[in-house]
Image (cartoon, rainbow, N blue to C red; front, side, top):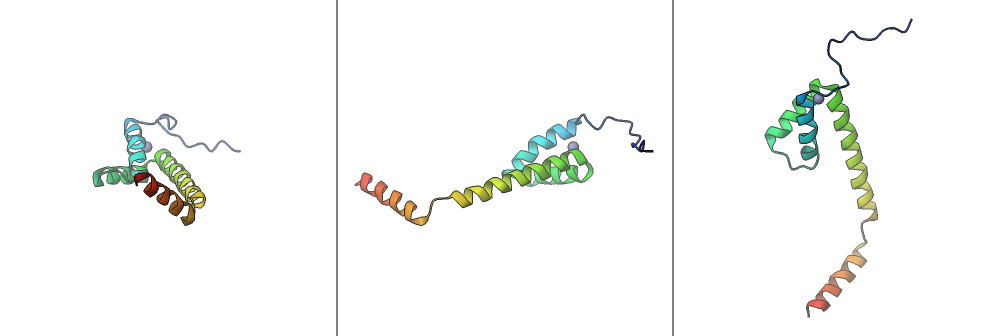
Length: 92
Ligand SMILES: [Zn+2]
């Protein structure tokens, strides 16, 4: 009773040419270094492509998690001040 697989003509496993470009540009977009055209391209593509949409979500989540961890382990102001004063001493 569970043979409800969708009849698809093309194999969904293999990413198409657009997907390969999309996944590359996606990294640039997530790095916030993409041009407006690249952002538009990725946004338009992930709206129609489930595969890239998933990749985008996963990558975005990973990056956000890393960012939060970096913020948490960032050195306290005292330490930054200490380092800055050391640098000043070296310069003198
Ligand atoms: Zn795609």
